[in-house]
Length: 131
Image (cartoon, rainbow, N blue to C red; front, top):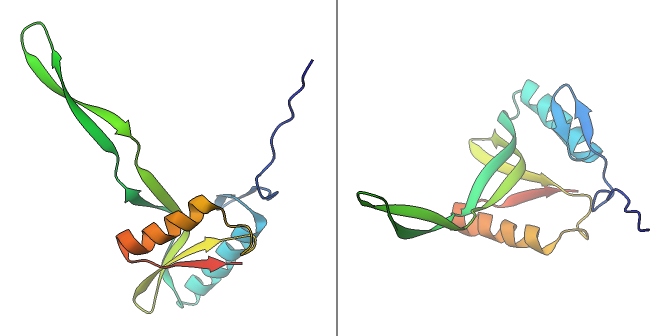
């Protein structure tokens, strides 16, 4: 008999639940509190969490479907969109800043590296990494 164990987090981080919501790690929660304090001092504004950026739109295929009395064009999804979710976004000195909290600069996977490059290419935004 094979017993499967519950899989832990890829980087061994623990989710943190607070009155402000759920954070992926203690480090991310700590950074949120720092940014919130900066916003209270008016050093930054418009602080947001988990902001969605579309990097590659969904791909559809148009097909025709024969109904009883007419023919109808139907959009069929071929590939889902690729999105990047920024940990934090805020405005500092009139510029939009996007941040991603990382455990270490040595633990960045290939998918993140590609999304980081696509953010710069598609949106002209450089992601600030917080270690």
